[in-house]
Amino acid sequence: MKKHIPNSLTLLNLFSGCCGIVACLQHQYTLVPIFIGISLVADFLDGFVARLLNVKSELGAQLDSLADMTTFGVLPGIMLLSIINYKVNLITGSLSPEVNNLFTGDLLPLLGFVYTLFACLRLAKFNIDTRQTVDFIGLNTPSGAIFILGFYMQFFTDWQFRSNWDFTIYAKIGAMVLPFILAFLMVAEFSMFSLKGNLFSWKQNKFRVLLIISAIPQLIFLKWLGLSTVILSYVIFAFLNNLTSKKIIDPSSF
Image (cartoon, rainbow, N blue to C red; front, top):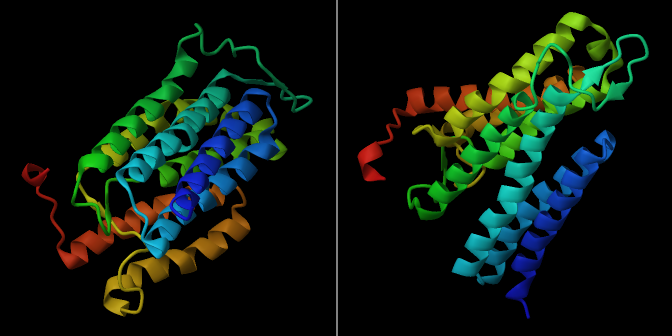
């Protein structure tokens, strides 16, 4: 019976991700972070419980990546598509599914799915990469999804942000460029620390501690956008951690 508990949590991740997709497509923006939050908790707990109960399995590992592909791959792609595809009425602040005339043609919003494609590639690489037992190599998909969530929620919930025409245009352009930046980070061959390992060693955890400390004011003062800047800080601290620890990833080892 206990061997089914981790897989049940993984399926909860998948179910919540599916609900998030429906909420995004139905323009229920305030529900999207709730479903992603549930998925993040379930995604953390499934592996933790599997190790705690000593019921890790190959089925669980594959199921986890399939669930992550939906929640942290497909859903963020749809969020980016929504930003590119929506027109903002600068007088009322209302949103319309009509494509903005500035971006002619119906194919540009599909650029959001560039992120989805590389999230799939990143998860497939993770499944066969034996080097990622403690730290990650490249940006993990939950972090990419959190970055996009912050950007998405700031755009759709902050009237002052949307009421400025320049910000609106920059946000749409950003939503078209962002998938390519995150795609590169997800498949890049550089080490990114996780929360695993010896958490009581200052030498090994100084950048983790700095990330947590810096995250608090970002989330307080930047609101939803703080989620994006925290992930940006994570990338920067991971890079600094590599420099100070002289970690070098040999691509030939993959």
